[in-house]
Each structure stands twice: as C-alpha cells, then as structure tokens.
Length: 330
Image 1 (cartoon, helix red, strand yellow):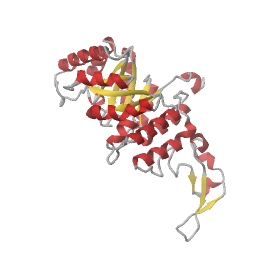
Image 2 (cartoon, helix red, strand yellow):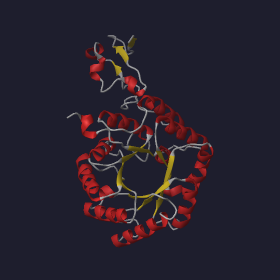
Image 3 (cartoon, helix red, strand yellow):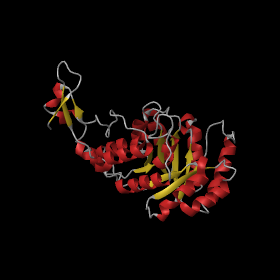
C-alpha cells in the first residue's frame, strides 16, 4: 500500500494566523494597507481561513479588518475571544458584524481566573451557549493544553463538544510539547470527540513543524500556521514547511506550492523580518550547493525540486585561496 493510498488525500486545513500572530512578533505591526495585501496574498495561494482578531486587541483588530470586507476579500475570517473577558457579550456582538466565526479561548493555566476547574467548565459552557446565538459555528480552544493533565483536557474538551462546539483547538502555548506526546494526546482526543481538532504549535524548542505533523498523523483535521513562522517568541509553525511536508505525505491542503517562495518574500517585506538563508523550503540557501560532492548531481541532495515552491537551484564552486565563491551555470 502506498503512502498516498493510506491517506487518500485527506484534506487538512492550514488555518493561517499571520494577520494575528505576526503582530505578536517583536517589532512587527501591519497597518491597514499591509493587512489587505497579506490577506490578498493568502487568498491567492489558496488559504481558506485566516485568523485576524486577537483577544487582547479585539476592538482595534475588528476596525482594521473592515476594509478587507469592503475590498471583497473572500477568505473565511475568524477571531479569538476569551471566555474570561469582562466584555464578552459585547465582543461577540461586534465580532458577528465582520467575522465568519469565532473560537472561544478557555485558559487552562491555574494563573488565570477562574482558577478552579469546575469554574472554567461552567464559564465555558455559558460562553459557548451565548456565542452560538450569534454564529452558526463556534470553536473552543484551550491555551496551555499541552502543559495540563491529559485527563482534564479530554474531559473539558468532551464537554465543549457535547455543548455544540464545532471544533476543538489544542494549544502548545509555550512550545514545550514533543512529537510523541502530541501523538498520544491528539489520538486520545480524536477518539473521544465528534468535533474536529486543530493543533496550534509554537517553535520554542524547534519542534513546531514536527509536532504539527504528529498531530495530523494522529487525526487532527487542521493546523494553525503562519508564513515564515512569524509569531510570539521563537514563532509558530511555518505554513510553507507544512504545506510541502503534508503534500509529500499525501494530504491535501489546497495551497499552491509554486507560490510559497513569493509569499515568503512578500511577508518578509511587509513585516520587516528577513528570512534566514538557512530556512527550510524558502531560504536563499535551500537549493544552493557548494560541496564538490554535490555539484555533479545536486538533485540527489534535495528533498524536492526547487521549482515546486517557486525556487531555483544554484551551484557554487569554492575557489582555493579566496573567500568568495564563483557561481557556475546550472
């Protein structure tokens, strides 16, 4: 049985969070024009859903995305609202004017009130009931889920599922999860839930891509991603890496892989955060060969052809006694 036949091209939603998470990257802020250009880019490369509203700046984000609606952007626009917000009802009402859906955040950290687990559950259920009056579909997400006792995560997720949540979001908020642990908890959740499961990974230990793949292979239906992995601290799971990886694994993301290099360059320009030459998939050195043993058959040393992502192969020859390489013809 081939890899493709095992998975039968199962669709995986790559929910892009660039318009939210990128602005948590130090030094990055998108004005209205930049938000529109990034949104149009996401639509162009095949993204279906974009997370555009952060819970800490709901009012400002909602006003900033109004021009996206006026410009005819057809992305499914989503946002996050904390169940603990003192302005919860007002935020839901305002979000319903511009967003297609919301996901409610239930912080599992004991440092966030209500600290008691019964209190978190009761507040979640009341908030979900209210949000479902304004939106046809509502998700429930659990920040710090990867740092919380598995049995409680499963219990509260099942209660959200039973109360009508259309999807459950599992957050590795501090990026401390590891692939085998992700596999175990996601597999348990998928086996217990009717709702689809989305995994949200951070890259603090360099494992966001691996953890995200583990989640999909364990039954997750979607992943939160950002272009160039922009986001808090060490960033988030990279759209470009996961789009290529999932395609190779036989999944269907709907992303036009040939535009990934272009998308990376545009977001780097808009954000002011350059892409490392060593970045997988879209870095300048990703298809550049210098080692003499690679020059004769460079494709043997590449995971995929550069044209797949809009890149190109470059060959160099080290010249003895000089610090500058000489570029050769392909």
